[in-house]
Amino acid sequence: MIIREELYIIAEAGVNHNGSLQTAFELIEAACDAGADCIKFQAFSADELVIKKEESQYDMLSKLELSEEDLYYISIYCKYKQIDFLVTPFSTRWVRVLYYMGVNGFKISSGSITHLELLKEVGRTKLPVILSTGMSNVDDIKKAVSALTDNGCVHLAILHCISLYPTPVDKINLFAMNVLKKEFFDIYVGLSDHTTDVSMGGLAVAAGAEIIEKHFTLDKDMEGPDHRMSLSPGELKIYIEEARRVEKICGCEDKEMLPEEEKIKEMVRCSLVAKMFIPKRSYITEEMLTEKRPATGISPMDINNVVGKITTKNIEKDEVLKYEYLSE
Image (cartoon, rainbow, N blue to C red; front, top):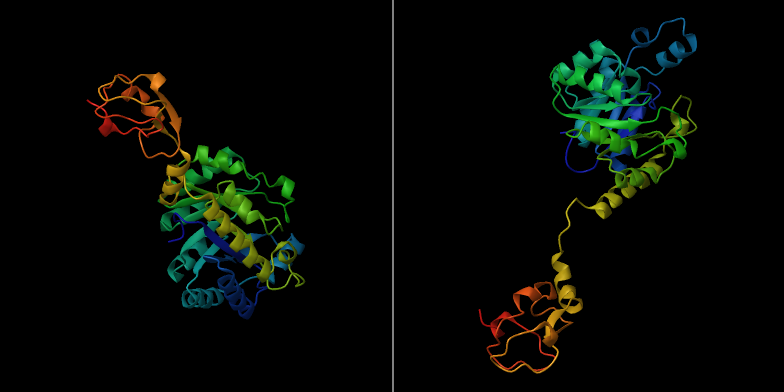
């Protein structure tokens, strides 16, 4: 299951395989070694994605395509390596192909957030969906969420994203995730991170991310559009380790005493203590009492339950009061 309670980390291979199946396999291995939960690829055909008049983009994308056969072998290798296989489809045809191939879920890119037919087709699969929101406002996101959920999508997560490659750290605006949580309170929220900062995963977790997606590459000097803004395998490992460390540091939204604190509590909190000798059958007054360590008797917060009671024994000066020393 892609969407879960624990931090979920997606290693974004994207098009950093440069159209090579062997490189894709190596990316899967690197993602596993780094400790990612999932690896994500893209499924597109340049003919379906961009008009040919856009020659530079068309030519670039043509070199980065993976075939149906390639993605099938990638899906098999992901199962073998026990890492989730996630794909961003860029056409309804690819949604159907990938569904029957057995993907664990779909990722909607920021550029596809207004691609209505794609959103509907993805929703109909009823598989988990992760929606990126770069270049979008809340109204755009609401429309996309409706298109998905109205067509059957149940398990949905939304990623805050800034579509700058790379994203300067002063533009990442991690607290935008709080806006998403308020607007979509029953949906998981996370970050699609296009910065090159290896500490950003931990910062995102501290800001509330439940899912993180991060681009990585085998070699930043390879030809291709995304390599230079991606992390190396070693950097990805550091990024993931830091994110998981911060997850442990942040803990959960409870405020309870730890069992390990019990002994400390007894040592450093106070009890009600006799300020003077108090004879048996005396009425207790506030003037007879003070507050001192240890916390082995009656809490000072309960003094109203003590004042006015009659002692059942002599209480020595500096003795900790206990309820058994008092009459009902």
